[in-house]
Length: 314
Ligand code: PLP
Image 1 (cartoon, helix red, strand yellow):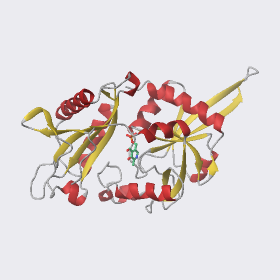
Image 2 (image 1 turned 90 degrees about the horizontal axis):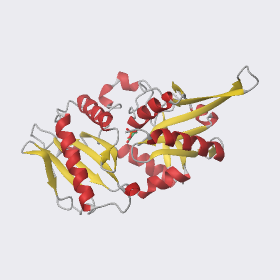
Image 3 (image 1 turned 90 degrees about the vertical axis):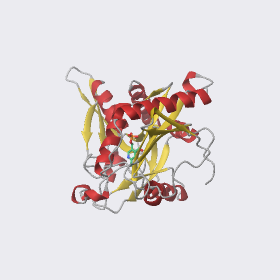
Image 4 (image 1 turned 45 degrees about the vertical axis):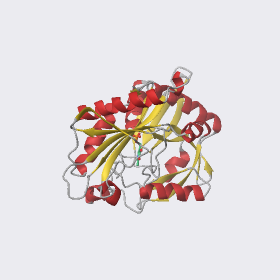
């Protein structure tokens, strides 16, 4: 096994250690027969900790529990996770004091595998590591995206629940292969479509689009309606915690909200499209399959508006 990046902090959930057991990320820590390694059998979460505070923690713990339920995994109670997360963040900040408050960020991952072959307990740990610089770059410059067929229709999730489409499983090899495919084509990211022509999600993100409609207000002026739309949650996609939180903030700020079904032409007709996720946050989409989405000025204005709303989320 090669060494993990020295900056990574590991905390295993362990009934013998109330606050979790810190482990050395540069040393082997998993059994080679762990089913997370041999089968990719498990679930995970990724969240951003800002100045020691894990954002949207309740939503991530809820989704972790939901994913575990879909895989029949019996995982530790929320309290054990909260303590281990706090231990990991505290240790990470101790090892890597941030030079400035705005740089005091870490990626916090929660990982669960089905455990060692033959054993009946899952392996669970928390990992804290640096935030990749690419995320900030893509947030600021925007991304170019290609549409890729995921090969399933949009109703397969209900028909074949064993595909685990609504769970955040450790089996991300397909998602990573799609991203590598995009990069070979000169793009930054992917929006998956279903075999029946629906817009689904990114390999690690949720799709959002905005429409502005300006109409006369009856008093000689005009009124602009802002609509924020995301694909239907029951189309075999992962429910995004960022999308959920942003929708709540946008509704409170007067945006109208909508849920698909969406087709690729809805993306091309949008005033702006984003891929949103917990670590990279809102990445504005400049081009899809080489076609520009909206205009640079509108993308910038709407991105700034939504970023302001997203910054209010705990
Ligand atoms: N969809 C997929 C497939 C993902 O992997 C992710 C996040 O990693 C998301 C959506 C966005 O979820 P969240 O906003 O909770 O990070």
